[in-house]
Length: 102
Image (cartoon, rainbow, N blue to C red; front, side, top):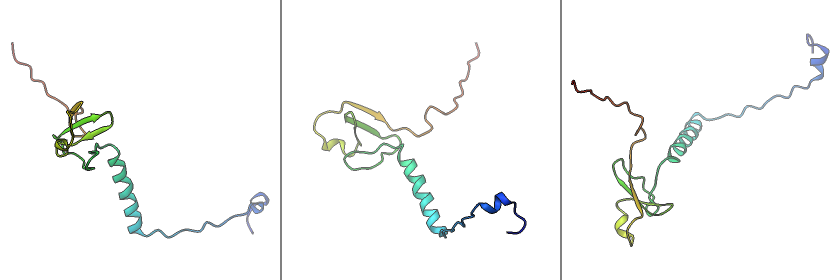
């Protein structure tokens, strides 16, 4: 090993084997990861598994059971609570309050 110091010559260099990653496989893996991340924040109906649309009402029959409007008639009894599905930017929008001249 010409040109290397004695300390550097003592170190063993282990070559790394580069694994070939297909571009399409990489794209699929990144897409799956991003979709899984987005799905973690959404509500789903426990009966049909559907993600309710913005503006739709979700009904809670138990602490962790959210049921969509389509599946609500299939349940016996009345729901304990309900909530409107809002977009992800709800509460983050800038609102303009107009002052009326006095």
